[in-house]
Image 1 (cartoon, rainbow, N blue to C red):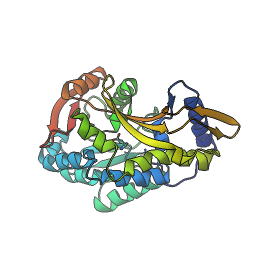
Image 2: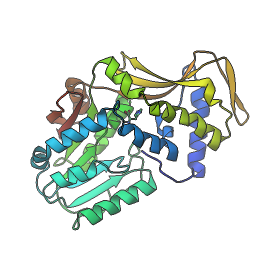
Image 3: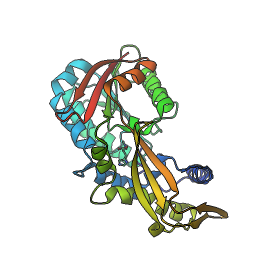
Image 4: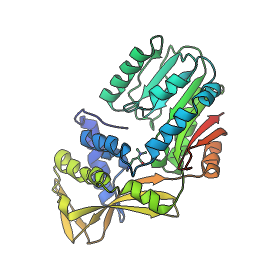
Length: 317
Ligand code: AVI
């Protein structure tokens, strides 16, 4: 999901512009969270994952490390790992190391540079591994590459990225993953858990202000790439808990009555009005289990960290 380098293609430019214009025309202004990840946004997100206040990356890595023997047993001998939204592939090495003689690795991401870097790194690190990067948005419908070696296919979706999908998207994603791995396959999915609201809000409004920069960078990107004239100092980052959706939401709060333009289009903002830029849904075991079941999976194992902040689910068809 991380767009590392490339300037927007014509098609992406049109999509970005129409998503922003359409989203800012709604009663609750909103911009899809995928646009947070330009080069600067991707760098800021990597910085977030290293913050003390942002616990999910640390907790998930600790689980994957502690459960290496169980992961190996779950995946079986000679598996093929399929990683959705591979990005920089930070946790990939940890999982590939756990597996017994993995035969293949298929990283999937829209970020060309990250994808190739990760693919090459894994090829060098695991000499006999069959590696085929797939440059696709993991939410689009697509097929696995041809010529995959025989072996159990294991889908890998770490980082609680599933939390950034709404219920329908999450179910569609899990269904497609099941189609990709087939009836003999498996999946490993990292999911952030519901917890004290205070802990959640600290993770999404960190004391160093990196998440605030990450969120405000979206307005800088609109100014730069779409010719907008947003005044960044007239907006503030806001993280809030939506109890009905069980999600932490990021918003950009207008600090004053103001107008902003994108080309010929003008948008009015009232003081206190917000642009909703991301939802990060949190689950419990039952809630995620029910979602997985609707998509044709069953929970085989659910591994939590010591503080029960995060859960890695092992799913079977
Ligand atoms: C990528 N995704 C799982 C992150 C999350 O926690 O929802 C994105 C993020 N937004 C703010 N901080 C991190």
